[in-house]
Image (cartoon, rainbow, N blue to C red; front, side):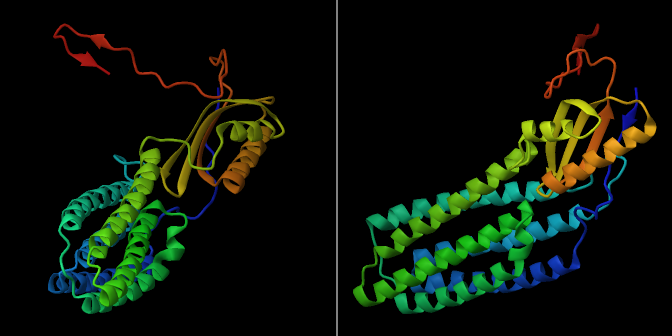
Amino acid sequence: MSHDHGHMDVPAAKTYDEKVSARFSFSVIITAIIFFAELIGGYLTNSLALLSDSAHVFMDVFALLLSWFAIYLAGKPSAKWNTYGFHRAEVFASVINGITLLLISIGIFSEAFERLQNPESVKSLEMLGVATIGLVVNVIVALRIKDFSKDDLNIRSAYLHVIGDAIASVGVIISGVVMHFTNLYILDPIMSFFIAIVIVTGSIRILKESGRILLEGVPRGVNVDEVASDMANVEGVESVHKLHIWSICSNISAISAHIDANSDESGERQRIMKELNTLLLEKYHISHTTLQFECVECDAPAIIEPLKHRERNSDDSGHHHH
């Protein structure tokens, strides 16, 4: 039985990027300034919507710092005790971001409900000015990290924080204008509800994507049957079985599979391996491959085969080993 491990010569999937770091550091600084401005402004104007927005901005700062640190960890080299490196740090950062967003939205819902029953006057003009500054800053930050958010769940979670806050700032501005001319102060808690809904929507999206990766689900947009069919259509491949596809992080996908080849010749197998790796990389963006040629013990090949625990045996002391 022979084992071949195909690894295409591709750039490192995640290294410490100085350009990303510079943009994150700038974003953290100006977002922190806006947090303090909205926090103080919300207190002085008695605006729950502005205070809610400041809480969201604080989470923006936290999300940006967390994502920034995760990028740094992901750039660390693999080690003997951690052969996949620290790429999953990005996913954990996304989970923490998603959970904190949910928690902050619960607080906003609670306070907004209480104020909805007892509306309080708001200094709408001052509130409007602070929210406008916040919107401008959110747009600047979003534009600076947008390009990096397309293929990276970690950066996308931070990006969604900022976008959500920009939407919230727009809502605060609209309610501020209306309250200034109508004194309908009930709009303040209503806008807070809107902000909380935006936050919850973003956090659920983040948690679903990061949960898929942590549970080693098939990468989004990849169909197992289609992958197996395309691999089997490579000349010299009879069938594909024991196929596993998963994500190491949001932009590194991996695959392992048994390949039933119709030739035992080394040169022919090298050709097959090269074509399979090219197919997987170019069509499915799977860069980490572990492909094993046909093994004699595969009596009933199946595309997907469940993983099995080692047999659980009890020793004389009653302890169980896995």
